[in-house]
Length: 321
Ligand SMILES: C[S@@+](CC[C@H](N)C(=O)[O-])C[C@H]1O[C@@H](n2cnc3c(N)ncnc32)[C@H](O)[C@@H]1O
Image (tube, rainbow, N blue to C red):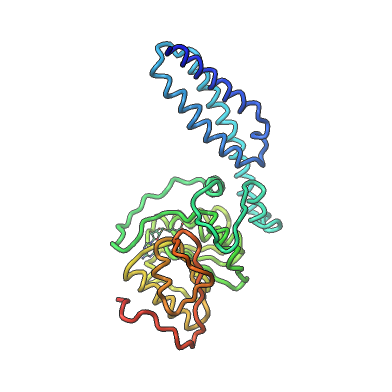
């Protein structure tokens, strides 16, 4: 019985490997998304299957060879991706991407299919895998600062959300974008690549800030800056669009919103939120939601400031420390 099962498993693994080997589409550079699926299939289905069988079989004979075959296909597919990303990085570094536009360039390799006005909740998908490959490969930094109680630890905004946000905002050349709590810097870099505007990241953790600066320099993005400071103390001069993927909560959030409110007395600003900070921002009387806020915190929420001299600018009094 066990032998029958083992023979059936071997047949299945052989046939999985053969169908991958025979799929010439996977070896065409443009088919990035198909390769993502194939690499997942190799890791979790084929190699996972082989590794689970190995300890159960006293003489695994063919299994190690099948494992080698699976590893070989995996290496070949990864090599195609690495070459693709090297070419794309070179296009960014030399500004050649600007002719076609960054969005079209990405669209050649992944299915963007953006929904207008943040219609759906957004999570991670193949676009994030694409961005992970595209951004220069560096060892991830180890944080050196202890976060204060109201500060939120690093988590990346899904790349798709940034693409949708740029569609929604329609940046002009004069806009200055701030990512408040910019982590490893992907949002600021993406906004600069997609919209061509100046982008500034404000980050409390120095190791994250240095990492983001190095990546932006390696991609030759002179209009992207990262400043290592507490968002409560940051200089927001000239900022017109402010993004927050819930970098902090409580009084710290109210304090920074109060800083933004002061900026809005000098010029109209846009505030974009994602995550649990959205309901708190919705309560700010000086901000007007540009679309319906339906209670879902994992959609882009966009607010614009009221006219600088509007009588209705009072936020909730007495809550900022
Ligand atoms: C949820 S992550 C968002 C990261 C980034 N915006 C992104 O979307 O990829 C929040 C970030 O805010 C940073 N942060 C927390 N409190 C901060 C503060 N007072 N000033 C500046 N950055 C802060 C954290 O270190 C973390 O990197």
